[in-house]
Amino acid sequence: MRDRALQIGLFGTFDLENYGDLLFPLVAEAELTERLGRVKVHRFSYNAKSTPDWPYVVTSLTELPRIAGDLDGVLIGGGFIIRFDKDVAPGYGPPTPAIHHPTGYWLTPALVALQRGIPLIWNAPGMHCNEIPTWAEPLMQVVFANSGYIVVRDEPSQEALARFVDHGEASVMPDTGFGISRLLDQREPSAEFNRLRETTSGLTGPYIVVQAIRGLDGFVNFVKKHRRLLRDFRFLELPIGPVLDDHEGVLGRDLPGLIRLHGWPHPLLLGELISHSAAVVGHSYHLAITALACGVPVFSSADLSVGKYTALSRFETIYSLPDAAKTDPAWFRTRVGKTTPTPAARAAAEQLAQHWDRVSAVLQNGSTGTQRAVSQFLQSLPGLLEAAPTRGEVAPEASARRIAELSRLLDGARAEIRARDDRIATLLKSPSWKVTAPARFVTRNLKRLVRK
Image 1 (cartoon, one colour):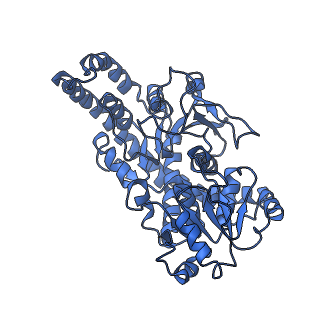
Image 2 (cartoon, rainbow, N blue to C red):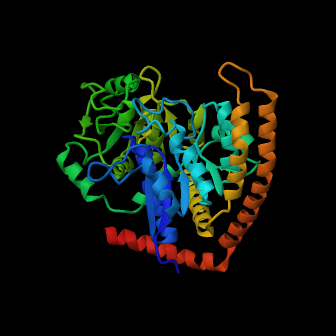
Image 3 (cartoon, rainbow, N blue to C red):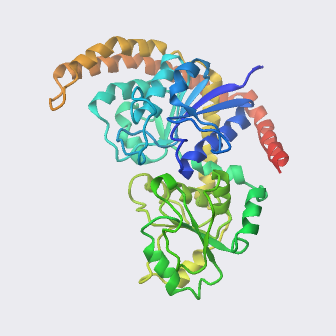
């Protein structure tokens, strides 16, 4: 019997005012606690945050060297964090020049985990429309060849990482933000939500959430043109990502039935507001995911044929934004209204349940023995750096030979990973794991009752 809480490092941009980023740790902590019992989640980002000014404690990455030795597992993501461009968010960067931007919050922690033999899990992050620089390719080979479990949230990300991961070792999984439905599932409205409804005129009746972003003039005009047909609805202007320039007032003041809040809500309260709405309108990925997970229709201004949004195109209740000049208002009106989640949304929830089972099994399996692979890599690193091209030069043949040599060294590591996968598969199929599944389910629901 384990006599201490498992120490889990979760890495991402949890220090930004962006709904999706703040959602991931809440989902991860709930899912891991249900399966593993006592868990201490360390949320690592560039900047330290603390309650009550922030939804939870965030640990600065400057503390990672001190804490790393105590970690029992490392989860990278979710969100769009496997990236090399600098434009993560306006003014966003590391607290010290010693931490590289932006790989300091995903690639470096992965290397630290491998160097210490800590299970490394890629928790359905995204990596699309983002080039991988030549200098990073050996590092990418090391971290992905030695990871305990790799899933990404969309096919473009899977394709981008294909050359670093053996076929079939990186699968596509729904964004873990779909787990918000389990956090809100069958629970009574929170005291905060009830207070908000009591103090905000219009929230007690049916309302439609409209993301507080520019570019929704067409929808505003649509509502104005058909205000009689839509007179039963109020429209809640809701910032989803203030760090990305969502802000109240951007929709103007002449939208019929407009509601505005004072201050930006806690992410779980945001989730409640979305889940109790009749529809949502906007561009945000996690606005759409929360709505779909909770049976709320989505009218999206995003192009569902590009990048991460392709993962949402298969859901039955996501529609293109209405055009005031072309859209039949009756078509819109008949699609508004919360229902039960669609089959695709229920399937996503089931996939994620299996995902968290697998994550838990990898963590229970313990130390990975990846120190040898990292030591071999460090032996080759001076040669890789020496052979690397300077700015403006073409990579020499020596660099290609070094990379090929590194690939051969990684073959042994991949064999070890496959052996560990077999052990994990055996654990998931074991009678003890199946016997304890009902207990985990009962424990989770008892906790929900206690919270109520």
